[in-house]
Length: 285
Image (cartoon, rainbow, N blue to C red; front, side):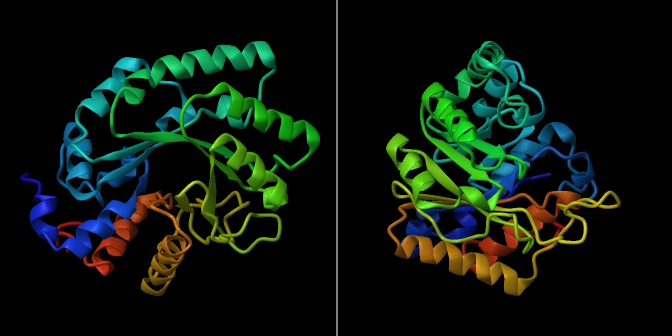
């Protein structure tokens, strides 16, 4: 299957080129078995990344959250990325969810640092994502743990706090102190969850769209990420991104994490279509 050329699709409109430099739209992960019959329909698995990067200029790599891969696997991915591509990498759950003691923390940190070294050497690398669970509530002890993370990892870091207690000026000041970014999550309207208030730190903003599946967010009978954003909701995402640009953001990451059944890819393509960046191929979804 021949992948369409993205530059040819969007043309050379200067306004569009500038918009493309500011907005980096993609998905949280690219390798999902259930995408084989939706987003990657008819495409061999060894071509999935090549097909993905023919459509998007950004990727949030999230397989690293579940297990730390060998450096060779990261190198294989990075080697395929085109010029001007943007890659962020999600930190392992052993750091953000298990939160080990000092000795174990350092062991995981070293292993992860070695794993992503090929990415750090690439011009595509735009930082690390640390996503904390809703049970990680703001306390002095947990704030000290966040500071440990900020001290321990080099380069740009983006932090996503699921619990609303972290949304305060003290935390934003802490992130600014370290040059770190605040992740804006779109989630169901549940009281304890952090809302999608527009926040831009250091000239960058980072939006993660998880879907609004309130019924299954804490349920046992469905996937919380099984959600398809409507056209109106995509318009809301675009307005949010534009408001962040208006607040001075020079780069806005937008990653769809409603990954169930390829819905993230479908919504990301729809957003780019609405922005006039290109028209999605009719063969997709």
